[in-house]
Image 1 (tube, rainbow, N blue to C red):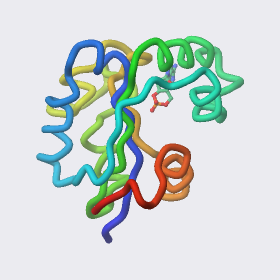
Image 2 (image 1 turned 120 degrees about the horizontal axis):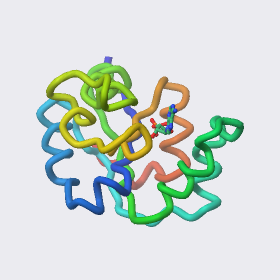
Image 3 (image 1 turned 90 degrees about the vertical axis):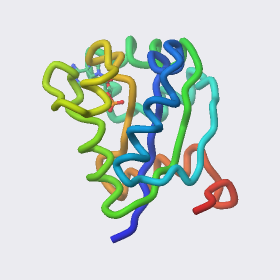
Image 4 (image 1 turned 180 degrees about the vertical axis):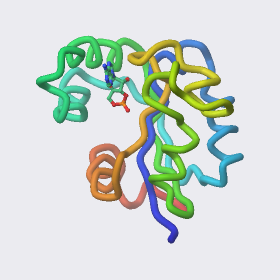
Length: 139
Ligand code: CMP
């Protein structure tokens, strides 16, 4: 089933000039980048986006890292896009990520793990709506 998921190329990726290399892995996995913009997240945007983690010990560090430098927010489209992108991202902790995955190839640590992807279709819709209007998504 064709669906959409939300992706962030995180500050550790933009800082190291890796957005093109990561997009190449995304596209090679059969996902289409149907919306994309480079933005600098505000503190309020990052806190809202990661609100689900607000009681976790890493929340403050996460918000700090996500607002330190620009990110690239994206909408990806393809067959089972949520699961397909999670497969190509690899495990949250790069130490556990499979060979060939984005996090195995590029991530520095569990915090600076290069990419975010939605964990469900419901969250994908919520996350996409936080950053894109319908008119900005061009399949
Ligand atoms: P992400 O998929 O963006 O969702 C939450 C982020 O919190 C996660 O990727 C990691 O970058 C970050 N994080 C930092 N420490 C941890 C941790 N111990 N467990 C899970 N996520 C963590």
